[in-house]
Image (cartoon, rainbow, N blue to C red; front, top):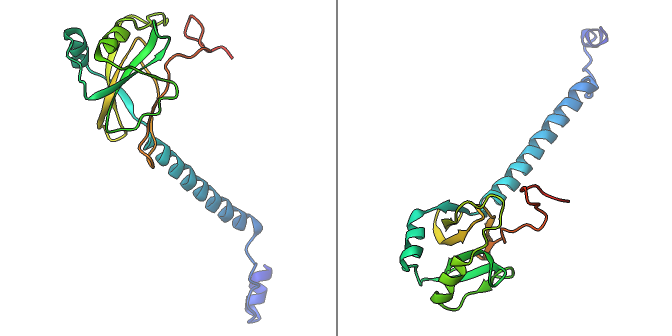
Length: 178
């Protein structure tokens, strides 16, 4: 009623005449929009730097017939006589090998693959897979009884990092111990 009386007298209404709950609602809406924008940029930035493993039976055939590509530099993770995984990385890529050991000859590559550890709880058969970057481009091959491991490509440097699939915090049922 007071606003009507002021307007009847020809005076203008004060600038901060809006009820406080409308101002708070606008501020909250703006804050939520900004937060969602920041989160979506962060998620998009992270999603672009991860690769993946895609099963490929042709690679298993190449292993079994002794015709693996020598265009890759091969590495293994785990113990020398019982590795957890063997990877071959295209030689045009830099590989972060801090958790991996270089395999020097193709004879040793076949030996390491044949000695892969099948001690994982879900180890039913060895997996041979392509290693793809975030655009689906082939960057290497994977051999292991472990079916998954994170593959990360640094978008700024192009360095490929593949994590060791073995997790010492996992018990014999595949559950995590912390």
